[in-house]
Image (cartoon, rainbow, N blue to C red; front, side, top):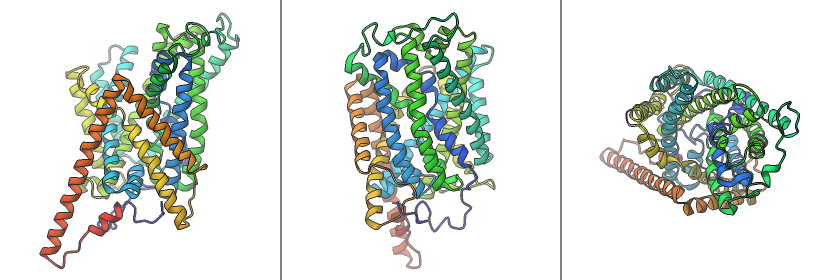
Length: 484
């Protein structure tokens, strides 16, 4: 966790241009907040209510607590050492180069698959409002537009994300105000349900602890994406202060927005109602607001496009960092005059274009299979972040290193986060559907780790051969160890 420049750099890249620092603190803060408010909340929250009833609030509190701990841990490491490889770099320093490369490639694989899913999801939702627009064409246009945005520079990307996130936050605030007014009986011609649904139809937890556990595994993925703040910190002005501010802001607003929204939904809509499939629109319909479904659909489209934009940014920076550490082809670390890793952007979006076309040719076959492999990736990333923070914090404290941002309650809070994560893994292994997803992700992790290990061995042997063949050739083993 030392702030030395050796992390993520090498002697082969010292003469090359570096990523800029043109993202503003307000953009980073809003990105951190907006990344937690995605389609998982606007669309997927109904599945959690169906699984657990009103007791899904407990599931959200547990998942929210976990992501808050993860954000604090990532914030501490990112403030001390802002790097585009973020948790991949921190894992490498704490647990070794193979572990760091595995986490980096795993996260990249997740994002490039999700990019295609988000493009198709946004296009499909928009087609329900404007049926004349072809889904395949809109999906390709969305990816083309946000590829262009990411190629023009991080400042433009940050500004897009700022306004996207602001729109989502505004929609949540308005929804909470309408929901509060409905529950308090302040809306004319709309009967207030009060808190009757918390005790009716089986009570607060109609499916018991099993329902809460199922709901936990469903809702935990709604928080995926918040870790991108640690990646963006590397291109933010004054990252020490910016990261601390973003973490503090995200921590309490996640609870307000998520738990507040779910409280309103669970209070207004019975868990067995057909309207729970589109929970935000259902609440607004009950409140008697016209065109509610259309408005929420458009907000959900924005949420998906915002996630697409952010995920393309995150994927390109991660593979750029892997290339800097010689864990990916060196061409991926080349930067344009705008300090954008254009080849890394192209590589990250290319798979999205291919997967989108395949899914359109073979509906319901390609993306579900791919998403099954990467569906639990965020849990692995969060676990690596927590373990790395524990290791690096102990090293920093032992060395007397000053940290710009120190996570409170260490090591107990970090350990509690690890226990929460272990419990979620256990719950996932119990459920049949989630067990298949977890085992698929574990298989992917093993395959990537093996490839990373073989790659490092091949490079080491190549270096040894070059050194033994010509004494004037300088070995790069020290550089590789520095990246580990």
